[in-house]
Image (tube, rainbow, N blue to C red; front, side, top):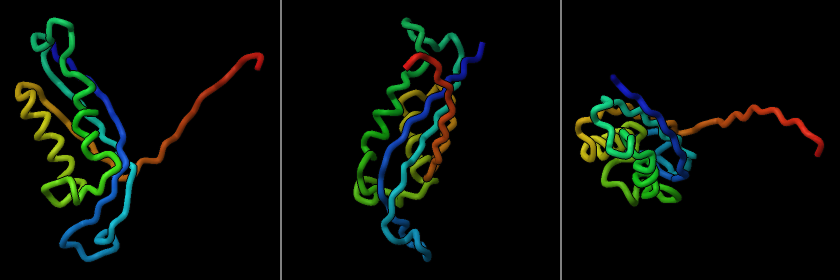
Length: 119
């Protein structure tokens, strides 16, 4: 049986696009959202029942959080290249699993909720 899991996390970082003619050639910042889908077979579950540890995402993006990506990356930090880098790290660590990575440069948060009570 196939198992698909999902997690997401955020990091804040600045960057500028190298060899780019436009306003994004200047340093600017984003709150980046990284979404990760992981697919494997139930036979790939560890003894504790985990297919892939959600903390793997936090480990990778913690190197980016509150940095200038141009200073910490050995590549031009475009959305495409950051996404590719995250994919390659996960694939190297877990080559028998399938991954899909989605990266948002900006994410508008929407919160919907209901509260009820006496205070």
